[in-house]
Length: 171
Image 1 (cartoon, rainbow, N blue to C red):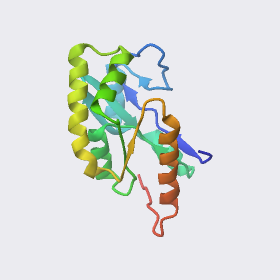
Image 2: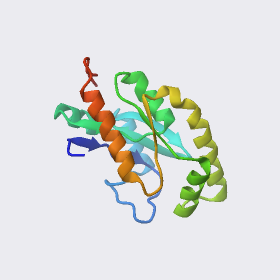
Image 3: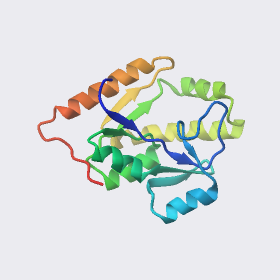
Image 4: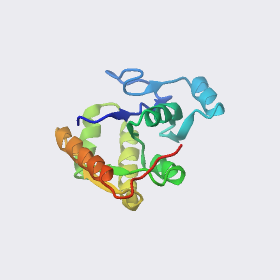
């Protein structure tokens, strides 16, 4: 993209999948570590999803914003809704699969969910598509077309930078 962006690594208590890196894909924490961070109000937003805790570390966002760097946070619809209440001026982008069938294929090929977990994820994904009005933009995320998604996100960032009245994020 050629612009300064910070991708926030979120924290979770779920077990690491094959190939995932601590501090790269997620911060993999014990339940005790997560609870300590909760007690110390170190999360901008947190939730229990599929029986595991997930949270957005506040300090990653504040540090990047203090340096004038735009921040990308990947959360589910529930997380986006919570953050939007705190930071309504932030830009929200919904990444949507081309179809539920393609999403199901992606999840099946990952080989990381049981049949019951897969069914739950697909049900939730269908429900989440009903929340599009919460978001400012929607991008279709096609398998093996990451470059298109990056291009579209870059176009949104460019458009937002050209606003006559820029959005200001104050944490």
